[in-house]
Length: 454
Image (cartoon, rainbow, N blue to C red; front, top):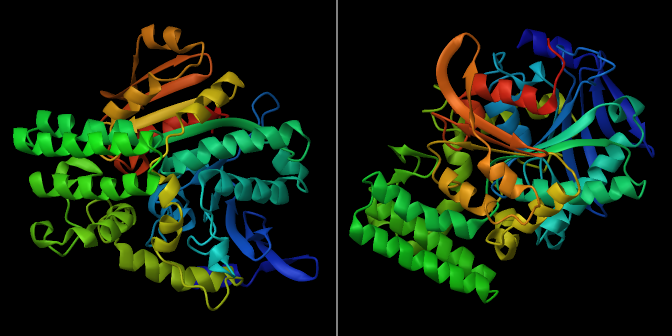
């Protein structure tokens, strides 16, 4: 903590338009600030420059933009301190930080999430595409006036619902680049356990859990019945109703499986203090919204780390260090207001956007944890087969290659690729691959970004 105080003493203030919008450390290793992406809508970002950087004319050092899910979960909080940033929630160095392969840019997206805020709640986004427009405005502000950043390819890496933001941002950014409005090189879009096709996921839950003996025939019938209702609602354009049915389906599965963990189907969910068997259905939607962040900070992932610890960190020493977070802004693990405003988009698929990215020649990588349920590999493979991309048939017939970690020749996963589509199957990982399989995740991001060897 003493070192942190010394570190804070060397902050340098950057001025823009006469007001403080960003700060950086004297050595330039960290920068952070706010971008007003729309009038009265302020998005917070935090950039870490890698101490492992290797300059190579043939392979420029990459930047990873991390997009969290939820929607409404904080990338500055969870992606940073919970998954891939330089320090964990105890402010101890992370052995497998992704800084070993790239610079890291975290954002609290959409506005209203984490440290990001709006001055009027009516300014919260209602669609994934609106979120992408805000993110594009953020990138324009950060990259257009920094020639050094423009030299590094940017890889948009997403987790969970963040995948929907990633594909809409990928398209928005590509268009902005083509029009000369955005000065950066897009290296690719990476979709980790991503909520790209909700219908395919909800149909995967029942059969998968039946095969695992977590559901019996009765539970499977109930699950499939609600999934079919969701399909009809989506076809009828009843998207908010479909979101309500999704909540009901999670409730029914939890009851009939004795609380299977939606983020690791080999485990029981232990994050909720109220017994699901006595929980009223009307409360389950609220719990579903918070489930993402509660599981991410579960003690089973990182001993000693829980939601209260991360919340204390972001509202305490981190807020003090950053200096520009308004006093009236309290960091929360999950913004229910952000989720509620996106209810109409929550169950909409983004397969067509993935198709567009592939057709435009953008590198698209999909990775999935073996024991994830919420975005089960079974569902991911299902939506991938629906792509209309011309190279899909060739991709499907390609053989998979096993992947390992270092000298350990135990199979850690599989990989296959054709042209600009890549797929990683990560064994032994649930929804949060960087936490469950940190070594293989680090190697994977190094391969994706073609990061120069450290």
